[in-house]
Length: 58
Image (tube, rainbow, N blue to C red; front, side, top):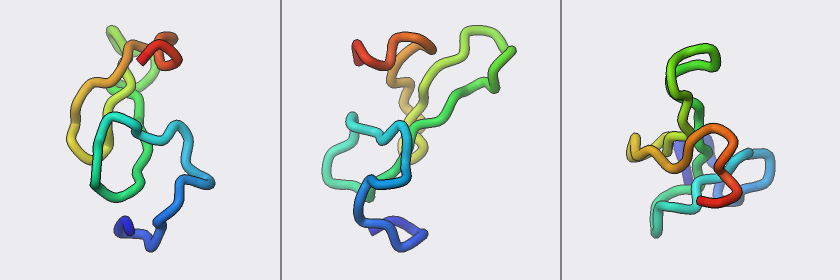
């Protein structure tokens, strides 16, 4: 369960699939859109998961 009481991925998009065993959590874009090289980043670990436009391949 995450800090908001969620234990299921419904309502979160995109859900991080790179972490195992942690709470359900989403990815976010860093830096914000319009910045250089926006990337999908895991909200829990801070790990870059995929470049913007390449999430399906991750």
